[in-house]
Amino acid sequence: MSRAVNHISIEKREAAEMSDVTYSIHAERRMRQRGLRERDIALLLAYGTQLDEASIVLSNKDAAREIERRKTEIQALERLRGCQVVLGKKLVITCYHSRPHKLKKKLRHRH
Image (cartoon, rainbow, N blue to C red):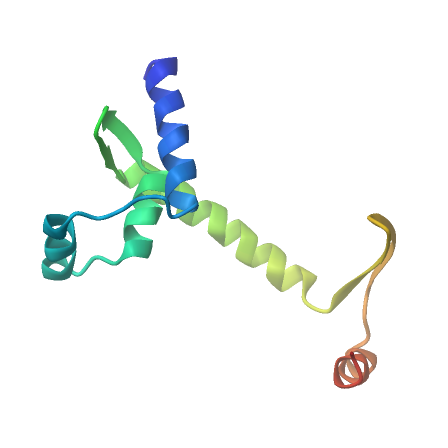
């Protein structure tokens, strides 16, 4: 893939993430027929491989890469469950694993 095509792909991905794409009547009809939603199209645009100037496909490799990335994020979320970060004006002061009973109390009395 050439740098120019890659650059176009980045622009299309940014557009998809910002929901700047509009749908033709034809596209809306086909999406309904094929069971695709706007968020599906956004995922395709964001993570797919650009085939040419006007089309993007989500290949098996693209899907596997994004699934693996999300699995890693899920594992991190599981590991970080109950962790607390104390901030002061964009400065991380400390971080720690909260004790479950103290965390429940803090969550009940939060502002």
